[in-house]
Amino acid sequence: MKKSNFAFLAVAASVLMLSLTQCNTQPSASSSAEPSDSCRHSGLNVAYVDVDTLLTSYELWVSLNEDMINKRENITATVNKEGAALQKEMEQFQNKLNNNAFVSQERAESEYNRLMKKQQDLQAKQERLANEFAVESSRNDQVISDSVRNFIQVYSREKGYDLILNSASALFVGDAIPNVTREVAAGLNARYGKQ
Image 1: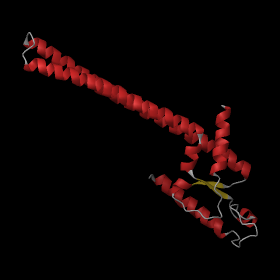
Image 2: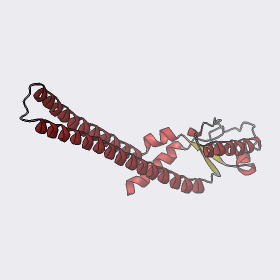
Image 3: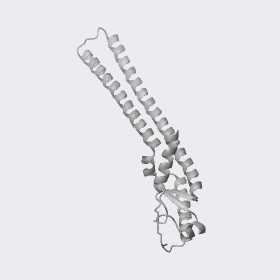
């Protein structure tokens, strides 16, 4: 985990503890997941989002994830198919070499060099496809991250939250902090459906 994540966790935990210690902790008659009004006015209004649940509920993430799975399978199938064909050619070359089927030493060396070049080309293709896949995967991660971050900023303003925590940050939350994952996922999906 990066140092910036630890710093964020420390700050978030401190803010959370400060806000919770300032809240009126007496149970109210209507005990729900919402913080009491005394907590809203004396400290921060805090909620959290379960990122794993959010992502698996977010239709854009599901769509991009399925596309990337299909691309990874296609890359693997392509490389395996070309690798198997090359392996067959190498076996045929070895059989010809063993049976002295080449007309000359130069012809055998030429065939060997052709197969080595083909193997290098296949390795280069595999590396290129893997790099392209990594770049696209990183771009998709950024799209999802920006989408979620932008939506949560708007959502937190509309709902009056001062802070929305990410449950993946390993913070343990109590019942006084509402889980807004379903609302955020529904909002993200509604926005994604309009595009």
